[in-house]
Image 1: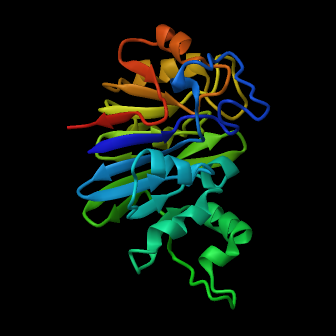
Image 2: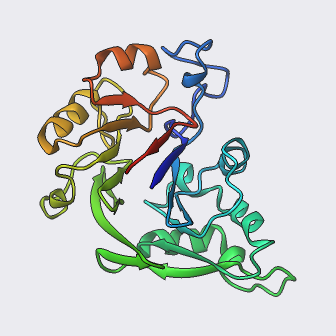
Amino acid sequence: MKVTILGSGSSGGVPLIGNYWGNCDPNNIKNNRTRVSIVISINDNNLLFDTSPDLRIQSIKNNINNIDAVFWTHSHADHANGIDDLRQFLWSKKEKLPVYGNKKTIDDLKVRFDYIFEQNNSYFQPPLDINIIENNNLKFNDINIIAFNQNHGKETTLGFKVNNFVYSTDVKSFPKESEKHLYNLDLWVVDCVRYEPHYSHSHFDQTISWINKYKPKKAILTHLGAWLDYDELLSKCPKNVEPAYDGLVIKIT
């Protein structure tokens, strides 16, 4: 199994509009961050988690030419507004693309992108096969996937577990019933937006405390804001922890 970090940045990316780099060194390519998403490559399938507004350029840069299914953590713009780029993956497939999200996410996206879900008397045929996540256990082809709730301020996001890997972006805290999915992972890609506490995201000290509690073999910090310079952040991380960067590939055996 292989995990590719397509995007590692917070909602505005790095640099922000206005060429604002914050604390980040603009000469370090690892500080140039698009909005968060990942691809898991497993059993000849590419599973995309979130459709970042930067999906087109992320796919080109990482040579992602095929997507077999999409899983949304939630409907916020930085995680969903690249949805239109999914059409490009369907031109050669000639079949609908399975997509998965909780009911709120699917409902939100249907309002904002109705044409991509339902026929609206145009020549365009909606390319998505909608699957609403109603329980924890999912199966796509022969791949078992667990979806679990995360607290994201006043919102609920989904974390996803595939084999012994978990993706936990956009999380402030975990409901007690979700914690069982976090212990002793091979790899955990987890939210860390800045050093100071944030009302809806985890911050550095809290994320490190989670890592110490749940004890993954390796952890990758993602959803990194302009406050977090790559080299400085890496210097503060324990040995089994490192910041994400766009294009990072991690193989799990």
